[in-house]
Length: 298
Image (cartoon, rainbow, N blue to C red; front, side, top):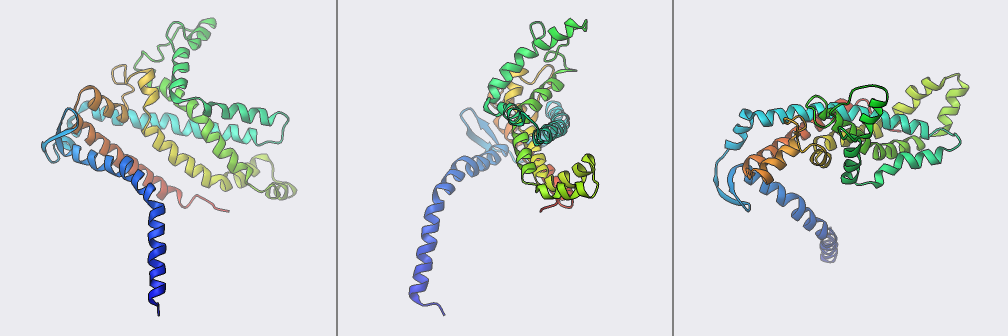
């Protein structure tokens, strides 16, 4: 049976714990929960300039989403963009991580090179790539011209713009994925490889029977964050194409930006933001459901 002194100590410890958590709760409340609540409120209302709620309109903005050709196109473009970027980023990062994990001369130098892009901001990376993709002065088109190949409108052609931005996104995401996967590879016990080698397992057998299964938790995590980051891509879109040409790169996030900050349709933009959250949540839950049986923890 608890005495009054014990109860008093538990209350004191509980209050002390809350005091330690209070700064976190305040930050989450101001920068996460409050914006979420306001976004939902805006999506159900007509909103005037300055974020002033005019009146409640119910599901008007949500119903308008299904009749908006621009929004439906942004959903299609977003999913195509995800299919372009996520598999290529993960495969390339895994390839580079496996190479950098080999006990070869100069491995540390290559690890530094593969990780260096992480120190460049998204805006700076996009500005660099803007020069590479320039239709007349761009490095890529100059290289193509050297081999007699006609120039390509990487960022000015609706057929190439999304692919070009996807390439830029892959390059911008390689370093983080590389570091995470390399860390996972270096945590795999060398004894497993030595035992497999003694049993006659070749390089590819060790890769697919030991490395990939034991790396599956990191691969699963990397896949999740890459899907989320792809759906939330904005900086490179804004700098490279501004959603064009002909809305070929108008991803959902950029559509939200245009509707709110350019056109002033705050209610409609908020409804798009809620729709993006639901899409991201559903895709993430599907990945958790599909991947839970394929992830092997040591």
